[in-house]
Length: 197
Image 1 (spheres, helix red, strand yellow):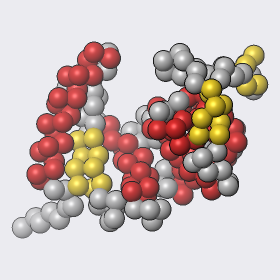
Image 2 (spheres, rainbow, N blue to C red; image 1 turned 180 degrees about the vertical axis):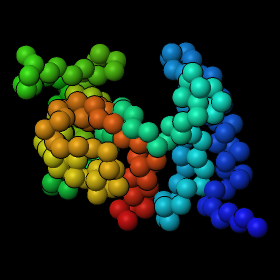
Image 3 (cartoon, helix red, strand yellow; image 1 turned 90 degrees about the vertical axis):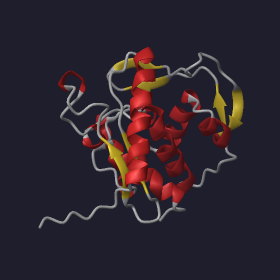
């Protein structure tokens, strides 16, 4: 007599499971042992597919764990939240920001000198180009301009609940220096897809 009602789309769930299986194989090249996936309808917030790990029974590699609900560092996927905060503070996608070697005073450390993934610097460019190319140095500068506390508030407004007080984080927050859940971050990106709703 048990009746289960869910928003899961079985066709999408099958595709998600196949994608995780393939993705986990590729991840071995990067010394990663697991993968997870969440797909959400941005118009309703309904979860359409969720794969919590590559193999529920592989206890040595996060098996018996739904990785989508566990806090993990999001890496560069946190950048759009910081840029959205900057845009709320009157910066625009066309604001010029310099991608040059930069050094920031860091509490408890001599300094903070972020680098781009490829070790290159591109000089002046717009925030739009910096975000589109996932450039680290301009993103750190954008967080500096937008504010750490303000960026955390934007993340909370988008539904991310795992971030603590701003004094716990530094400028590496924009590069993924905090922990969020995949489920909440996917929902936050759904807000972007739904034009802010």
